[in-house]
Image 1 (cartoon, rainbow, N blue to C red):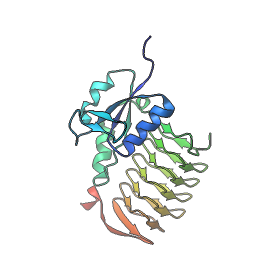
Image 2: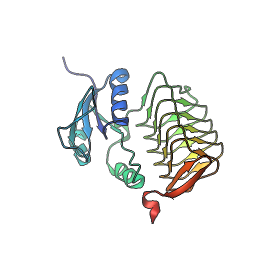
Image 3: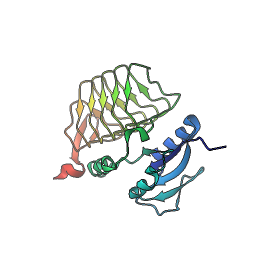
Image 4: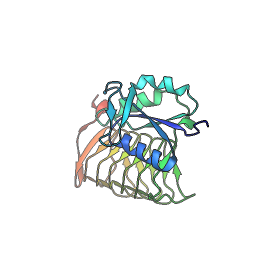
Length: 226
C-alpha cells in the first residue's frame, strides 16, 4: 500500500523547529524528514529525545521541492540579523501551498473571526482575540496573546507569554520576547527586537532593540545600524 502521509522539511533546528515538528507529527499526521540548516553538518541530529537528521543547507531545498508530497516550514527568525534572514527566506521559490499552518488544538483561535497566514505556527494556550490578522510565517509560542484588531507581519515571532495589546500593528521580522507587553494602539516597526519582560507604551521605530519597563531603545538591530 502506498504511503499517503505528507512529509515535512523544516528550515532551522532546535527550539521552534522541534516544536513545529512535534505539532505537525502529533496532530497533522506528517512524517518529519528532517532539517535544512546552514550552521550544522549534513547528517547531524537535531533534538535531544526524538531526533531528526540535518538534510543539508538551506540551498538544498530545491532537492525536496521537486517531490510533490513534501511540504516546508520556516523555523528561522534570525534575531541578530532579522532583515537578512527575512530577505533570504522570501527569496526561496517555494509555492504558498507548500507551507502548511499548524495550530495546536489547545490554542484559542476563534473560527471565522481571525485570519492566520500560511506557514504559521500557533502553539498550545496561545490566544487570538477577534479581528486579528496574522501574515504568513508568524510563530506564536505557548501562552502568547494577540489583542483584538491587531495585525502581525510575516516572519514575526512571539516568545512564551508575549502579549500584543488591542489595535496594534506589529511589523515583519519582529521578535517579541518572553513576557513582553505592548499597550493598545502602538506600532512596532519591522525587524525590531522587544526584550523579555519589556513594556512598550509608545510606537517603536524599525530595527529598534527595546528593553525595560517602560521600554527604551538601547541600539539598532541589523540593517538598522546603517
